[in-house]
Length: 208
Image (tube, rainbow, N blue to C red; front, side, top):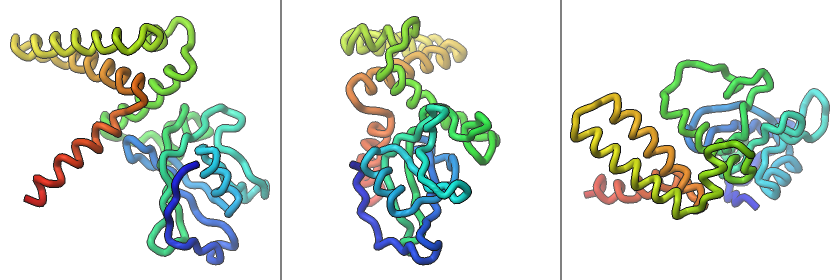
């Protein structure tokens, strides 16, 4: 069950429907806009996967029910007037039915947004363990092996920096970040949790 402490919702303005803006939990990118009635919101909360109300078909529909590209809900918030919803998700695959990451197109975005896609892929690999995948083999090897890889890549990243090889530094940093993300996932955490920790540490510094 997803927690949802919201301003009392005003279902009257939209004839029993509220616009639901779907946002990537990691990157903040807006992925799509859908509509929810009270039942769709209830199902979304209970299943932690986005369900909408289809205005054209006049029925409930779970996003990704045919494609498999479901939206795993991380949080739900209402706006100050209680007449719109903001849903933070981790998408399993592209959100748009045309195959794009976002229904608003593949506009030029920060490369940091790719970390959100990688986070979702690591989560999927951890859950499904498809054969022949390096990431699956890594998870199957266990936390100790993943931690060892993080240590190895950390040393190689430091050596690349010391020698001044910028190309090697970028490559080793990418390896380090990937294995760190895998280690966090193996422990049931993500870069989101690391970012929250950094934000908590930063707040006292700003106040000071």
